[in-house]
Image (cartoon, rainbow, N blue to C red; front, side, top):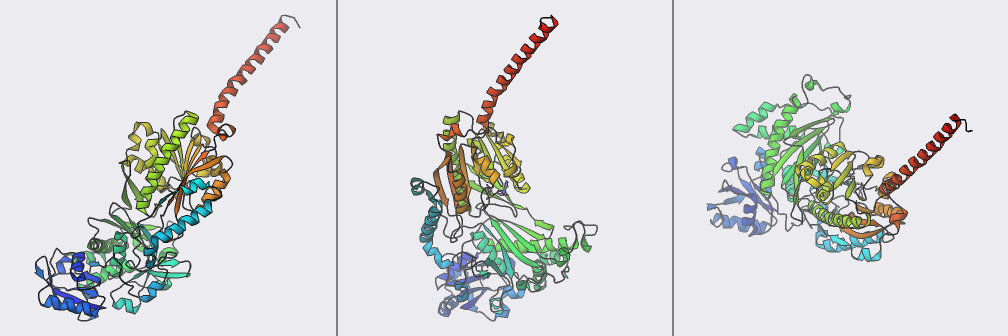
Length: 617
Ligand SMILES: C[S@@+](CC[C@H](N)C(=O)[O-])C[C@H]1O[C@@H](n2cnc3c(N)ncnc32)[C@H](O)[C@@H]1O
């Protein structure tokens, strides 16, 4: 490794990616840093090359005036000393990028040996994606072969994932203090995740394993290089350490913001953001949004009973308390730097929201949801609010495949039901979450009855239905979300439904939900666990058959995937196992018969009474 400082010439409007492209022609660049716009004339940028030879070539070229950007000559020098790095002096370093494609060789050989993504394979496996997917598909088919006919397995639709940058959710990732060696490279914090195989935390390097979306990778990388000061021994999670408000208040953070950005200022916000910080979660969208949630440990809150308040909350809410105000001011600084880091990596116009979470307390800078949009094959663009900390599928482009497949299968299910039942199609949707499938499928049905147990998701689903004008489409205006346990829905919720969609958690269906599902003629089943799916299909096997199967590689480089099947009642079973609605039709025959018999008995009784009155016996 060898570093050059760009001591002058960086144009005000240049981007990291451009500088990187410019210097890449001399050899492989590991890292580029450019100072924030207002500091560009006083602070150097720097470029780290993998090889000293390449750095030397770039240095000579710049000294002979051959390196220009936007007509500015860039003048480089060998990096003076680690301590003189702008990031360490001022902490205002914001625009930095590392090449994501193609990935550089591992900076630290030890990382290459780690399964850096928990049970995910190392980056080297990206080249083997097709082979890994083939293996996964073959494993899934093996798991399903006792419950799915060979012809259906053979015709299964396979939807692959993007090989890199496919995951739009990351975390919670534990925050760790870097080693001294990494600190000297300008790394202020590390992210790690639990590796169940190694039974240890594995460090995450967003560059070496670019599985996360570009926005998340860039945010991880920007955060690692921000001057965030971690207190306590975070690697040992010393959570009982007394947590106190940091010795900096909101006004000092804000005042420093205006004119002279000093080392003190960055130290101030970096201390506040790092104080008690234990983990971070990231949620990005195809629509270019990013939500970062920082989770904090505050030992004082651990022992606080429900309803009790912290001293600084006396007469305040957490938001208006000194701690809340201080954190929000620091988070604004953090957000601005994150924004620059993400833009520098090439995510233009991104919208970033930051949330801080403590036990029973939360501070939101911006919004507490992201707005995703999915363009479907049928020309519709659907928008969704995905609330912070709630379920949403992590692989957004794979999710679009899943919605397209479901829409097509739902149409076929409706067509089949019309021929066998001649009734208007009503969909019972269990485990509807935030209405992801509900919104996409609603126009295919006369009515959708969606059931979700989680209040926040049920509310989000209602909102998503409104946002996509589902309620105003005449044929689907009856679509509604019921907040309930799928196992405890009442008869009214499923009466008249012949088609059901289930998308349960990993455990699959419970006994009661299985019974509800078995009343239907057509079942759409989305599963993130083929073994649970196989077990539920086994339960349905006598009366039903699987007619289509799709496999979505929602979690590439892991052994997990998403499967979906359409299951239909075997023709001979429709009369033998009528559902409640059919039973209802029989009830209409029994009830008049009952009253007719009752009427006849009454008439007989009345006749006898009259005869007795008339003295006839
Ligand atoms: C795999 S997620 C699917 C969510 C949604 N279909 C989607 O695609 O976004 C499973 C959902 O089932 C919900 N759930 C879990 N147990 C449930 C139950 N007993 N009754 C109703 N919903 C349940 C969870 O809250 C979660 O939203």
